Image 1 (cartoon, rainbow, N blue to C red):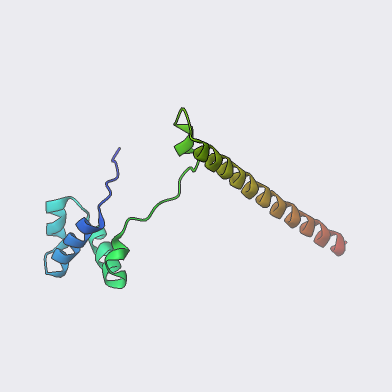
Image 2 (image 1 turned 30 degrees about the vertical axis):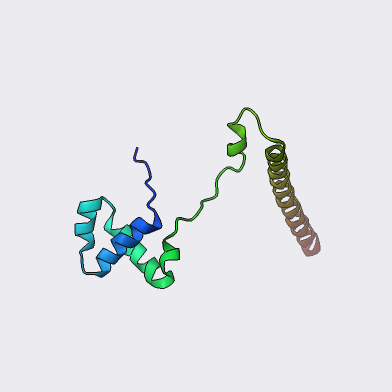
Length: 114
């Protein structure tokens, strides 16, 4: 299985500048191992949004993972963990309320038709 490699915006910028200077993305791929598709994507991002567009985006993940791997948590971390759990529970309850409202609407719609 292949691991993912994250490139800094400085690395991306250096490659994009070489591409904009006329180097082939295939040649850059052979030299760096970065796919020509990624190089073209970075060029588009750079031209549309500047160097800041090359910044790696944070991807959502499991918010509980960072707490569950540690043996002891500071008081602040304990509170952050409790807040994360409560937010998760709130989202689940909101989803449940939405589903129940929808089922009530469907039942009422069926009752009106009869």
